[in-house]
Image (tube, rainbow, N blue to C red; front, top):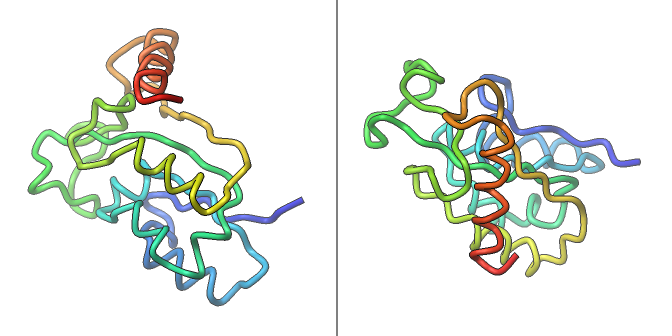
Length: 144
């Protein structure tokens, strides 16, 4: 069993930098790599792969995208999530997330665990089954 921390918006550990500080202080802890929460919190989730203390300690993955009404001005500390920004189906975000690049980096670092494609309810604009199909079609379209 692996103990891990879920990087999650509006908690003490939101960004890549927060996760790096925590993982440095707790060397037996693993990271739940949540691309959507890191992105929504203003962090680039791809930076996880640039940090020695993070890239080889991913214990689970939540793969998701983020869409903001105004990506240039979105700020998770002052903005209203679910009104000004929301989680989105893979490829439907506009905050610069590249799911294919993230999956390729996971392969590169030897990650062999589960990857969950996650959408938090009730915020996707599509019904859950339709959103799940969109995500599956997207992943198949990029070779997964």
